[in-house]
Length: 187
Image (cartoon, rainbow, N blue to C red; front, side, top):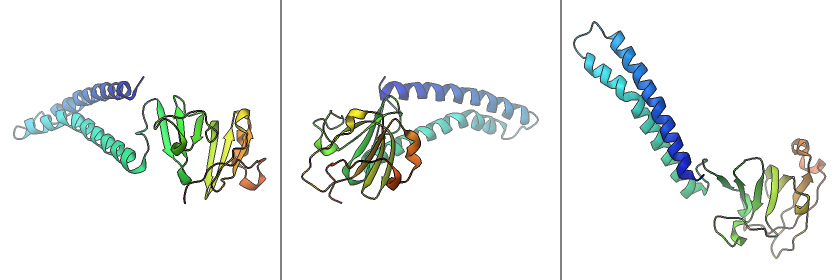
């Protein structure tokens, strides 16, 4: 399912709820203004149009936040099959289908602009993430991702632990950790 199917689904659901709201508000307006002669039709018309105007306003707000997130913050709109978010120092987080597992990767080294290939600076199975200054603490569920990667730039220490998400609340100093050498951005 792509983002178009998700948008179509929510447009149909929104239209159904707006129609239900229209029936309720129109009935309420008719009942509450049954003895009024002047201005009754304007109140009933406003009650009829209000749910659809709210739906249009909500859609406009969504499109505006989508545009700002894509162009300014380089994030996805928050619906669809994939969620992506930039991290400090040039890294990014990508989750596909489920937000339970994700990739932490360097987008500058990926062969595809919107994808993640299995490279040395891409870590799969990230369940927990904490960013503190130039450090990224990861809770990884994939033991094969615990390798050291050579780099030509400064280093970013990454603390990794496997199958122990309860340690995510521990401080960076008290975690069972290793230093992974990953390229660091120019900050």
